[in-house]
Amino acid sequence: MNFLPSSSISKIQSNCDWLKIAAIRESKGGQYGCHSLLDSGLKNKNYLFGMNRVFYSFFNNLLKYLKELFFGIIIKMNDIIAIGSATRDAFFKVNFKLTHFLKAASGWAYLLPLGEKLEVEDVFFTIGGNAINASVTFSRQGLRTACLAKIGEDVSGEEIRRRLKKEGVSLNLLIQTSKKPTAYSVLLLSSGERTILNYRGASDTLDFSDLDFKKLKSRWWYVSLTGRSIKIFQRLIKFASKNNISVAVNPSGYHLSHRPQEILASLKDITFLVLNEEEAARLTGISFKKEKEVFKKLDKLMPGILAVTNGKKGATISDGRFVYKVDTFQEKKLVDRTGAGDAFGSGFTAFLVQKGFNRFNISQLKPEDVIGAAQLASANATAVVEKMGATEGILTKEEFQNPRWGNLKIRIKRI
Image (cartoon, rainbow, N blue to C red; front, top):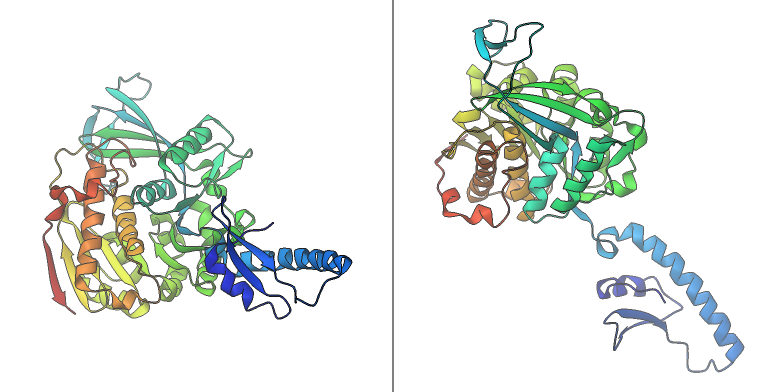
């Protein structure tokens, strides 16, 4: 016998003109069965047997149809899917000499003598990558989460699978390939700042052929693509739009450098966009010194929420009606800034999902909702930089209730 949740019985009834369906509570199993009630005039046993076979065939076909039509009722739909990269991270705590280097964004560079062996103070291994970092946030915040990323058939890939399973993240969308090893990052840490040596590996090969759209149905997506995988971005956004999936996007610097126009063209279908100041300037072609113009241009193009981060200085958020200047929580100790951006973006998104916001009702967001999302985002980012690695410090739902995270300075101004 096939079973359905009671909430689906009424939907089946509307499809049965010749058959009456009754929901009968099973005395032991505690489930709802579907039984045919034949007209009282049908006494013939052979006819009854034939009708049961017809019923069985009809019901199986109907069930297949309903699995597609009422996917979120029959099969628990994911609250959110994180789509992007997955890496194995190795942190080396170093005390290398620094030298002025004007071509570097910071103006500084490590001085490494060629041909010498240099000692490191400590080594730490963990997992990372945009999709990994975000999916851990979502799962720890109590959301049904899956991770779409590509890893190798190797030890690093198995470690990623093990850690995600431990975090309660679904592995159903995690793809393994024998063609490339798992992406790997070596991070050189000094006084909380870091230099990253990055090998993209399998993550860089995420392609159209890897997308099983039937499995990608979810209430929300969090998309942060890097390297050559950015080519799947537009197809993802189009599918999300047609299937009423709300999308949060945290584009990589690589994506913004190589395909800024496709991001701009997709803004109408994006519910939450998070950038840093440099990325916002690059996307709009306007210096961030003209902050109002940057926000004005992006607010015109998208109906959702825009957040622009600035590291230690916090973030500026616009909901199209108000601008929110968000400070940061004071960190107890700066250990490593890796993953702070992912922690902010995924924390903000997690709050929106928890509160039931989506692409259709995002305009109903109230200032107190934006403040709540900003608090979780900022708290998550601060907790992450206090520990080594991008996932170690991510907050659970219970940890966010700590009074420490209840006080954040936010200034609001009407646009």
